[in-house]
Image (cartoon, rainbow, N blue to C red; front, side, top):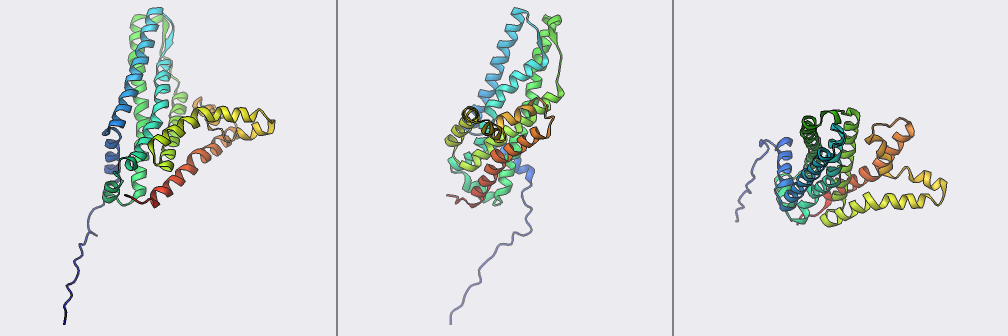
Length: 267
């Protein structure tokens, strides 16, 4: 007669699940705690400081007129170019550095991990708004001290809100491409090809036939989002183009990327 020892089961039903805010903090730390993330953030900060300093010196030397919003726009233009790359790194680093096994072992709910990464991307947009306005405040104050007659404190609230929304959408595109491809170099290359080359191709194709040009306006995200940046979405057609292009270039890749992440084998 043989005896079978009962298997031991550890009851973890009473364990408190990891709160979402802690997951966000973990993903935020990952964004700068790697060499790629750290140097990307350092490059963004250094480039903004260099360009803003150059504009400030040039303005004071030449005595040209400048406004608060000008400094904010300069900083925003630089960050809008590189922040989507950070969103890509947030998603792809887990897979390119083989840390996905640890991440998804500590938090098996992959959807929460992806949502935490997406939240960090949005928080970086908020931090960018704060930083660019702080830089604009300092630069404009210096201009006010040296040349008060040539300095304006003009501030466009609607333009700032529009810029923030455009930046969120741009970050979302980078995030969606990263989730879809799960490969850092490929996602970065595809993003820059999409952002700079695709509008030229669409414009060239649209010149062949008038009806084709009208149709492509509904899939050209850069053209559709331009009125939002200026806060001038005045017609239903402009809203429609924005919604259609957003669904095509953000929602669909993001959904496909989520499905891939949920089904991907962690090695």
